[in-house]
Length: 320
Image 1 (spheres, rainbow, N blue to C red):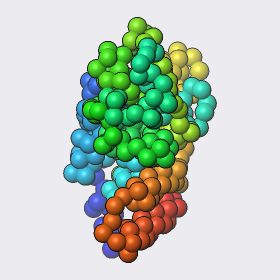
Image 2 (image 1 turned 180 degrees about the horizontal axis):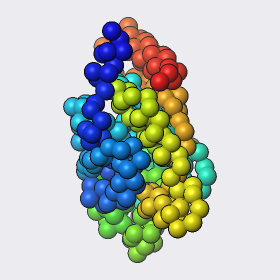
Image 3 (image 1 turned 120 degrees about the vertical axis):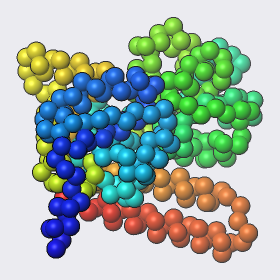
């Protein structure tokens, strides 16, 4: 009976696999960067692959919630939610050209005074205009809030003179063009920004950088047969590793994709650092929040502990 239900849940062989893409620059830019790799993936798994490229984390998250995405390139909190709430499974993790096991969140400001020092930012945040990422963004919101602002008694959403929310690219441009004073970003996106906008990048400096953040993952619906997920994994981990003209062409495609070097085999346990970050942020927010009484505060902290323990348990389940 279980086998029959599994077979019934599996999509027909020629149904398109719907691939969701995190917005790195604009939606069109992200899609065009991924198109060559996804065309090869389609041939490798013998199924059409359609692309969902959106302008915001929220739009992609909503598409995943509506079951409009079968496979996706996700980072941190979004990948964690997809695995723990939307029955998806990690099959691969990206590797960048520098070989580091992650990237760093950054704060960018203009090089010119007066609003151009970290001390000035922390002393008087209400003078600064902030451009930040969406709340699902690890480097655009979660890590700066957790590792820099909350420890200095600054809540990003309420302490600045003004606030805009956008992609790393639009936020960096806002600071470069004096439309904002400080922006969250990350080391990988800022490298890309320097190549695409060299004049604007010359106006910027890094005020702060975080600890290493694990790289993004590729997730696939659990409902897909294990054999199909294995083919996807095998294709990704071999992509860009070959010799000759074909390998060179694949490496060029990877370079346009956030300067990637390729993919490595991964499973749900690769999301444990993301779960810990989300847990630490939730706990920090609860510790600094106002409650009607201590019992309400302790109840909130206990729910956070229970939720984290449940996530860790789910992420240890790496069965097919």
